[in-house]
Length: 369
Image 1: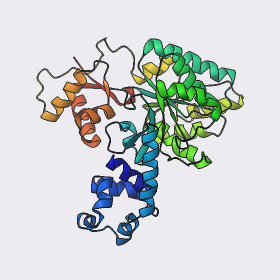
Image 2 (image 1 turned 90 degrees about the horizontal axis):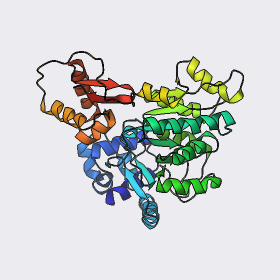
Image 3 (image 1 turned 180 degrees about the vertical axis):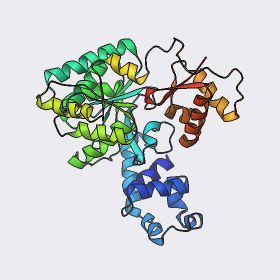
């Protein structure tokens, strides 16, 4: 609880941006150490300006953090700090990932497969039908998927409701604190999601759902997901921003095409035309592109070396993959092996070149038999 308290306080310190706070956290190793042993930091980080140390002497941040801790304890909210095991590992890879997340729910944010579906707030019957059909088909092909969206009007809420109807856990990423819900009309769905998914935000209580907050929350939607699917969008819109962010994170991006000339098909058609999203027309298309289908058939790949000598770390990775025949996402491997992502990438590349593992869409790897 102390680390959570100090992580919240760190986010409240004025005069230091998110990048600076993440740098300090990485150097110190914990938020608690930043506050309790900040004078020692100068020996550890000789280039650290005195101004930063002075900024960390912030009683108002500590007082406000106490208020926030009282609220989350009273309402049984989980506070996930950047180094927590339950913090979304995919999101942790992103340079602008939040230091603190507030979570009300029961879904595993590090599920093996996570997909985001977003779109216009003015969903047409066409878009609503896509949501409904997609999750029906996905349930048949891949029953265990975590669905992420933004709980907004239109495609977002259609996605959440269709996911719930078909038995998927679904998480809504909010643009405000967990002391309120916007839009309030989605309260009943949100309550269901807390039981079968959850509500997630980086924002503290007393935070209004201001315009810039929606842009900020879009990076969490894209960052915690293996892939982002855009269903309907006008020529401009938040869904296109999310797609751009997903591309910047090197995540998969897909779009359903629409009829030429339809206002809310222009954005999706442009994404496809500009090669910013792959065209899909069904869940089957998506599952095949992601490599999430039935992996029981032996794939056609380069012949594996008959005798392979593995290092201790390579053997650790192979053993983890053997325990999951359908494969594991690279972020899941990072969490389960406690190896840094750059080390994991190098190990997987070497194992792939030697015919020991196979890479698939979505950053998933599996052992070859």
